[in-house]
Amino acid sequence: MKLNITWKIFIGMSLGIIVGYILNRKFEGDADALSSASTYLNLLSKIFLRMIKMIIGPLIFSILTVGIAKLGDFKLVGRIGAKTLGYFYFATILSLLTGLVAVNILRPGKMMQIPLPAAGADTGIEAKKMTMENFITHLFPQSFFEALATNEILQIVVFSVFFGIATAAIGDHGKIIIKGLDAVSEVMFKIVSYVMGFAPYGVFGAVAAVIAQKGLGILGGYFYLIICFFATLAFFILVVLPAICVFVKVPYWKLLSYVKDALFLSFSTASSEASMPLQIEQLKKFGVSERIVSFVLPLGYSFNLDGSMMYMTFAVGFIAQAYGIELTIAQQVTMMLTLLVTSKGIAGVPRASLVVIAGTMSMFNLPAEGLILLFAVDWLLDMGRSATSVAGNAVATAVVAKWEGELNMAK
Image (tube, rainbow, N blue to C red; front, side, top):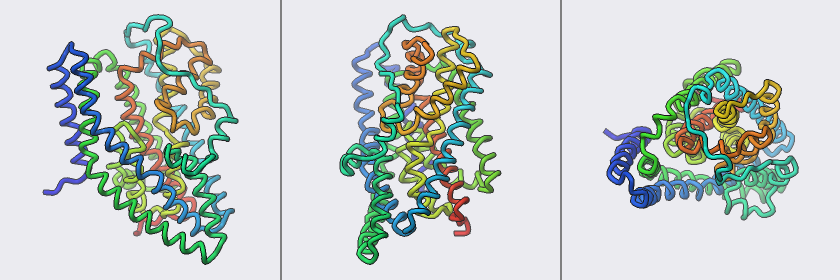
């Protein structure tokens, strides 16, 4: 019996947990040995993620340019873009609100007895406040090749839109470029199939490295926080997203069956980006037109990270509760509105969620060292929020396709 990618990834993750646990027990107390073992295991994950990043830039550029060029209408691009961003902001408000309501109802910071970090302890995270000027200038690349080299997805999308419109505008000469880029996109999808063959090994390395380093014992003290956050994510995936799809008349459970491999891959690697090429293919099979997939999905990876949005409000509320600080309703609404603006376009920032959380905490004078409370289990919570973001972007793409009459499930 030939195993599909989901089973292979599941087996890789299961073996990773077993091997990581064995190494953690064997080298218990020997920090150097554990660090060395984790480093070698993590090589598999790093190789896989680097291969994924290697193909994302050329893939997005080729399929988006061809899609825009075939549209050939700047007004049409603007209309689709406006609908896409409108949906993203709506989904962001829902995810921020879900995280905020959940942390107030479940109160994990009050229910858990966790030793607080020493006052003034260094978090290693620099609080970053995103200004509107920085955000707008960040949209436009100084160099397309620099954007490709650094995998700045948003900048690649902006350049591709301009390039696609210009290609359509030059008529017959542009058709040569479109044909060439069509071939490039086919080559990139072929490379995707090769890279995905390495996915189970990458998953094994990522999971084994984390378990070997941190151990499973650390989950005990944070059990209630983990349960609360994953329950919040589950509510969003199983209630909020289906409700949106019912309203727009998109078959949510069928959509989920198509993107389940992408969800599982993102969960096991704690990287939503890792599943983007796979998700593009699956959404096209679901019936979304190529030009909608190639336009909406890359934007979603910068503007529509639902899992990370929930985490931001949930985490700030958790830290405030742990320190016995009650945030007023007005403060919580202010926090949500601030995050609505400051969280956009930070996908390229390392440990982006923690950076934005640190900046938000400084606004409300919460102890900066409180961020350390999250470090022990951030890797596990990141797995859940990455998978949730993938589900959210699948729904976003299907919804925009439905609005544009470009969802053909009969295919």
